[in-house]
Amino acid sequence: MRRRFYSLCACFLMLCAFRTLPSQLISQLGLPDGAKLRIGRGNVLSLAYSPDGKRLAAASSVGIWIYDALFGGEIALLRGHTRQVNSAFYSSDGKRIVSASEDMTVRIWDAETGALLNMLKGHGSSVNSAFYSSDGKRIVSASEDGTARVWDAETGALLNTLKGHGSSVNSAFYSPDGKRIVSASRDGTVRIWDAETGALLKTLEGHTKSVHSAAYSPDGKRIASVSPDKTVRVWDAETGSLLHTLDSGRGLTRTLAYSPDGRYLAGGNMLDLLLWDAAHGAPLQPAFSYTHGSGASSFAFSPDGHNVAAADRDGPIYIWNIKLREHIRSFEGHTDFSACALSPDSKRIAAANRYEYFIYIYDVAAGALLNLYHVGNHVDSLSYSPDGKRIVAATWGYTFRVWDAEKNTPLRRFNGGHAGMVVSASYSPDSKRIASAGRDKTVRIWDAETGSLLNTLKHQYPVHSTSYSPDGKRIASAGADTTVRIWDAETGALLNTLEGHRHSVHSASYSPDGKRVVSAGYSDMPRIWDAETGKLIKTLKEYTGAIGWASYSPDGTKIASGAMDTTVCVWDAETGNLLKKFEGHTGNVNWGAFLQDGKTLVSSGADGTVLFWDISDL
Image 1 (cartoon, rainbow, N blue to C red):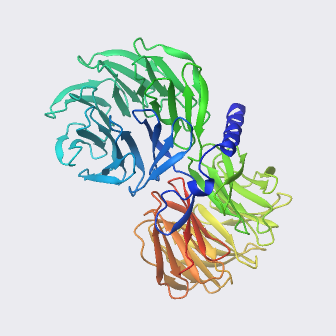
Image 2: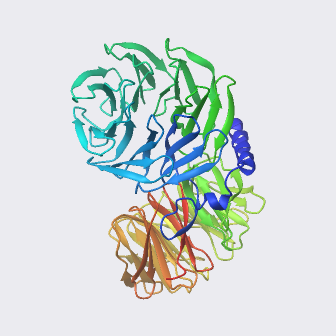
Image 3: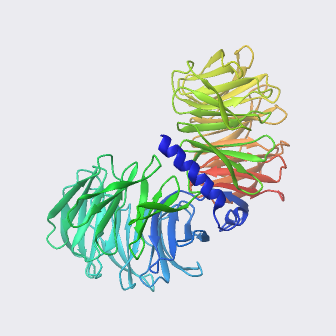
């Protein structure tokens, strides 16, 4: 843990010293329509060097980031896919990039200008990978629909469909001579196909679980495959016989990579990047220390074989020099925010990473990282105290914690109350109380200064969130029992039960004047209630997916919400009319808030980004 902490602190210092584009400019690369700033760069799914080794393409949940691989710095962000990008690879001449996405498309880009050249459609589900043949004339793609497909790289015409796997095809790659295709599947097999005819030549069996990926050695004589059964298997590409079985000991990540000269095979577990002697299967020691808890999602060797790059799905991209065995460069900002909170003055955003157990503090005006501090556990929710002096975080386990927001130091850990996981915690308007919601079906009220438990309020099912009324006299709680409940904040008496949602309710928030409550729930439209009588006033429509949150603007004239369909909607709070729908996230929109100026809406998505939307003209 100490090693991880110091390494991430070093990464933060490197971030501050990086000679890259200004943070404001980086945060404005490839923005969707209506957005004016971005925090975060999305989760990384795959890495690929350009053939000349000068650039590194990172397929992410927001698009394809192009980095200067030699000196560091962002060059471009290729946007166009509407869901996360699972892979991106260069053509052998370096002029094209092919990408595969959850949006069921394969796209071809001009590697120099970033222009979209072609979009290949035909798969019936998410496309997991797309790869060029060595001559650049063909593309093979692998999909959740159980097929691999071969395309003409110039015209985009579908040439062949490879069928035979009994489940999702996780990856498909050409052999170096372009005559074979190797595919890896969730059905536990690796298959070899004739690239021209599509005929199945051989099925390699031995893995006991899904095969994440399979790759040819540079000479085409071997195939390496990786599986969550904790093994890498190396096969004779001609006969299909098993040559080596490599055991990582701590679980393997999803991809493998051969070095250009075929000497090394790179893989990884939850803590280390591993190198094996490709010919004999012997591990090379010591391993490269990787500092993130979720494990690397992709590896890539530089064309000269001197360096290897590794990307954590929820953390930075690291580059190591193999000979020196030293970390030489990082590309920061790739993360998966599990929770966010806006400071009362709208000058700061606190964001928690799902696996690194850190809270990041960003400057809202510039999108720049100001500080970070260690939490020690997964964070489900964050909230500032109304006076802006504290941050409360609900963490995995039966506890929540409070930090000094100015000094970034831990102040108190609240224990001994909930009998189930705490999923949210929020302050009273005077900052003297904290209301926490738990999966133990309770809302618990605490003295924010002493940590003493003052009251326990009970739902019939787990509680997802709590919200104080502006005067602090009421608490609204949203529960999995399909209700919103209104409680007396002092006595704990149940005052009203708002019924009408058909499914679990995720959030409930008061209007600034305290007269209304807006609620949002799973597979249900946002609803506006009279906070005093509990009467349903209006149901807001226009959604196609589950809704994670809904909240009022500071002046009470607008309501915003975010959903699993990746959109953010803004309504007129009085009429219920839809004013604007923003599309730009490529994953579930799990948090949002209005800035105090009333001209900006901010939202956070499962794609690992926070986007700022201009609503000044609404």
